[in-house]
Length: 171
View 1 (tube, rainbow, N blue to C red):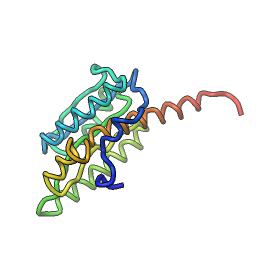
View 2 (cartoon, rainbow, N blue to C red):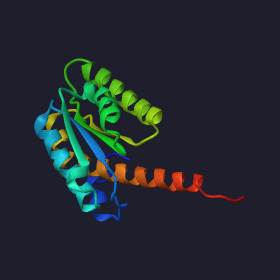
View 3 (spheres, rainbow, N blue to C red):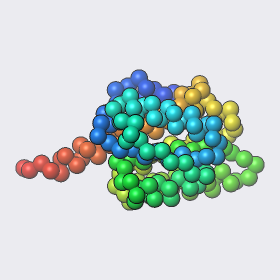
View 4 (cartoon, rainbow, N blue to C red):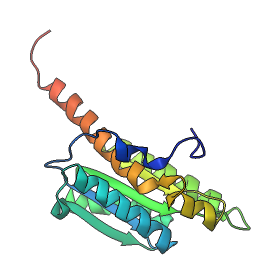
């Protein structure tokens, strides 16, 4: 569903699973700092509202969106968080550079999530211009940071459900 049809911040109004006892890392791109700072703030607010203590939210900044997957892998190796949220903004330019970056980042984050068997969340927006970016980072379409936090909480809940079923005995 396109963001024109759904506010990214709808998760603010739904009941989300608790993040109590979970450690969540957020890795954020410095490029398009204003946009990404807005998404980071919204992301942290949702996590805290859903019982993730501020002390259990680890925040890291990297130069650009391209560095998000590598940083997530390094953060996982050092801190072993329960989930990692990657936030960034890749705005279309005059060349195909944005396409290469966006595809590489999406592929890297997905591969990392599968390889680590833990939620690594793609919170990267790919707007055509700054106005579209602002609309998705606290503007008329809500805030992608809210959606990223909600996704992390929901995926952690799914992982917990699946892990608890492995421990049960019976037929």
